[in-house]
Image (cartoon, rainbow, N blue to C red):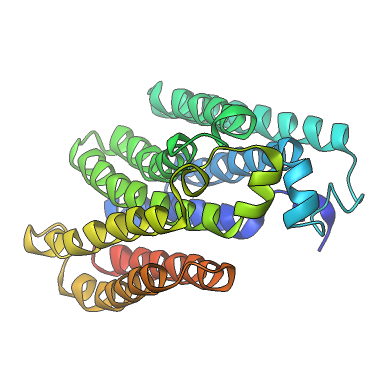
Length: 284
């Protein structure tokens, strides 16, 4: 893969775009501002991933030396200015969306996301739990971004309320997964002097917290059907995600070695993708 594409981690960016698309599906609106919102999301998240690699050069040299910067395929300064360019592009598009919808929300959300991504990479990532919550918040923000665009176009607050509910679910599950990823990267983080939750309170404590968040999120999932936010297709499909979430919680509580953490992180991501499908089909 081209190094400039690899450093923005398009797979993660696509997941964020799907969150925006979902709000279009739920709101039955597929307008130009929503399409531009997808582009802004991709660029903002890409900039965040690139700047994250800039600040993570020492850790990645230990944990993931194959990444573009530690492998020498992209220079450190080049990656830094590349991320700034992506951020600026996202903000410009966010400004256009705000102008088209007569709503200041989209550009403020994009600017806020870019600022948070920068400070997450520079300061927050190595803090106890704050960094994990920041990533969870950014994931939830994708739903709020799409909901704000659709809400402005349809002149309804219902879609914004729904986007807020989905943002909360995304916050919990993403935070759970981020804690597991910190458990996976604990050796490199220790080398760098980071103070992540598993370093500060042990892997076992981190496993309990991660599993607890995932279980709470999973238990709440059926409420979206019970309160008629989504239809029967949602509950049928999300059932498979719930099984995967429960299984992942069991696995991480049973064993906290690196291989298990990697497997659980992957399974939680797959489960979230299945949940996204449930959201989409459950809105018809």
